Length: 284
Image (cartoon, rainbow, N blue to C red; front, side):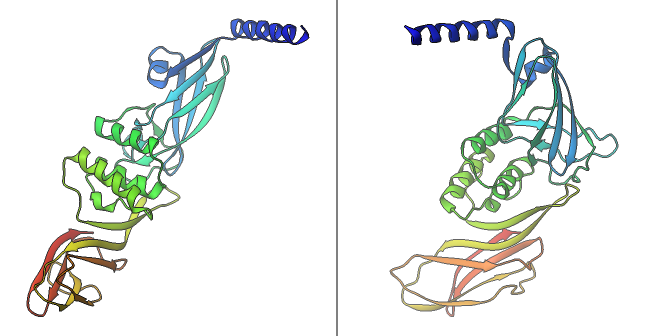
């Protein structure tokens, strides 16, 4: 009897609370359109925003910012990198409350300068369909920030899909396949590990680290091979690796440190003393 009375009192209290303080759950686009909120977005340094939001309602408000939401630079004469959200955020506000939320995303304009602290941004909108699909994929399949950034650039700036790498290549392979499908291109035949470095001012620079490829070959008899990389002028720019090849095998795994190579076009070559076994171009 006592337990029943406790549950009844709790239920009545909850009902009273809900009647006294309603709760509205809404996506950010509707919240802006319906004037449930007013907002202001300012860069806090790098690819991070201070999103100042005021709840204009007498109800508690839960505003969802979806994966695929894009904040555009609003810097006037200076146009900075736009920022893409790759995970859903929920902004909780009490009635009539104003709060500052910190939102972090990824650069989706590789050619633009990094934003400085205090630079204004628009209140945001959904990105184009390809970026929205990518953002939703990344939200459902978490992976490190470096890999996410190169996945975003592969779609937003048509950078090489081969730059999408990870220590767990099965995860990266699935992401490369997804991005290749979005772009309507074949899977890359190689991978190129790069590192994106974001400065304190938000500028993003990327540096090549390691080239890898598993390439096909066919030989009629056992032979000694050489594998190396050449630049556009035909100059050898990597170490030359020698290995015996067997006719019962059909693939060769190439791996090169390319940290000292400049941006440009290169060719991977696999050859024996008698013949060229594989030659194909790639870009850094």
